[in-house]
Image 1: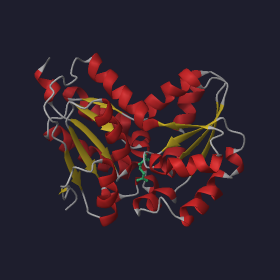
Image 2: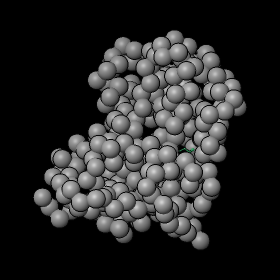
Image 3: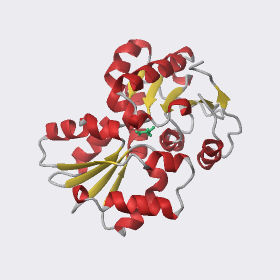
Image 4: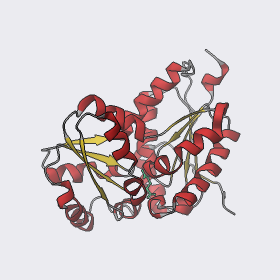
Length: 271
Ligand code: DGL
């Protein structure tokens, strides 16, 4: 086992969405240490320009590299669509880099030939057309129908997951004709697994939901194995959580995923 194996996995998102992925990673890879960065100061990413998301992303990668992360997981579809190529180039050989889009596309390739798939995500993710391009390139007669659902992230961050306002908003979005007669719905934002149950309720379990959190965790495992940097030590992992700004709602929601974590360090990245 190389010395690099014991280094952390760096994971980031604009807010709590990436915690769905971080949680899946720690479940699948319980020996791994993670460093999480939630860029709450710039939430939501989905409505920002590509250039702004790229700037935030590179700054966060700098922090993760300073902490010697062996792998950086962009746990955000918006940042993955806006900045993955740039991050790969920037990080170069200093760490492995993985996004949440390619693992989802691979999963679709394996399971959804000739199907009609709906995609919901932020404006950035949907308008980038990245999923459409990658899925069309597969040439598997998969039809992708996409809808930007920008109100969902602020509601989820506010802890509205369980109320009528969210149910109404969700029902408005999911009834859109763009999403008619789909076989599966891809949750193209890492915040959306938090409202998976409400989405399932809308569809009365008649379609499949594609949640990229578990799929991405499997891809992380594959990449670590491929590079022989999986952590085999069985010590209790040491996770670190940073936020660029605090909100009470974030801290409350974060406890659902990591109940033992009591400390989120304020990292004033932008001051
Ligand atoms: N969770 C993110 C995503 O997957 C970002 C959402 C946002 O900040 O708009 O797109």
